[in-house]
Image 1 (cartoon, helix red, strand yellow):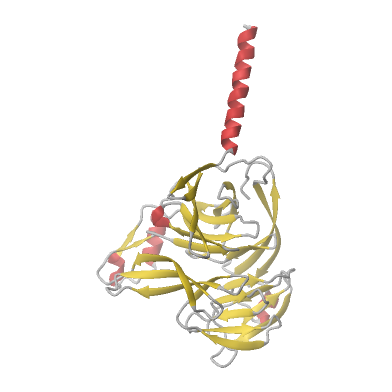
Image 2: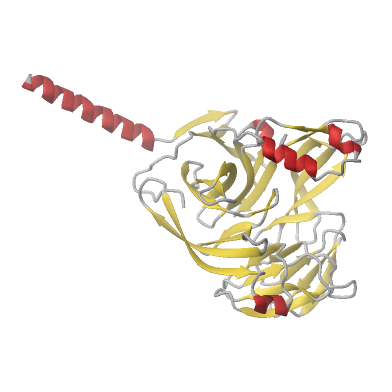
Length: 389
């Protein structure tokens, strides 16, 4: 009997050791010369690697703040952060200034980029970016030009763009990752192009093209049918088309596919409450109402960004730990799923900017009263099993 007990204990220890080894070993393979990282529903626990992310809120820049409202900041469309931690926020459409600069502690320093159509003025503040040289770029999505300002808000010049494009990312050497769109000849589809451009916005190479359906009168359109996401870090570009499932591609800037990151996931159904609210927004007299259909479930992701350490943050459709937030899957620099966190960068049905800079996560959210807020969290990595914030 004693020998049987000892044997049972030995077997149990062997099983536990085997499970631990299996849990730590990242499943990988090769397809057509490309590495494929296979991730499961639960994160890997990798010995010696921090796999728990703790977020500590440091500051919040809120449009509900009376002093900021008096200064003219009533909206947050997008933002960027410079090498010193200064934050640049741009708002959509105002007669006053569009861009507001804050120090890393959230103190308002200056505002600039006045509303208008004259030199140094902008009608719609769609995008603000900081270049590696410290210049501030402002982009009005309705015109083919960029406004360039100094860090002190002094207008420097305008840059005429060769075509309609939006900036997805800036690289240290001055190149841009851009997005352009065109309608196919038969008007049945849109072609979304992810293009690498030089500092003069001349095309270096096309990287990815996504063909997706375009709504036409009398034809059915499906809400939630697909989503594509894109981000850049260093010399790597991350891209996903949800029609491939939870399958993210990693490219070099030369356009070479070097890795696929796959993950098992639980589809999130599109609820009847969402369908009803969506239809309700369409006027009853509109013929569009009868042409709307809905997918059974949402795409597996809706937004991505990366940090300097190579972590990839993937915003899923799974509800977060706080109402209005969503869970982010976090992958390490080798494509292994290591933990999850919860962020709320959503306004209506569309993700707002979120990014990781200098050990902090910046995320645009909407508070319970409907005001836009830019939350700043300090990231702290710890060893141990993942715990959602």
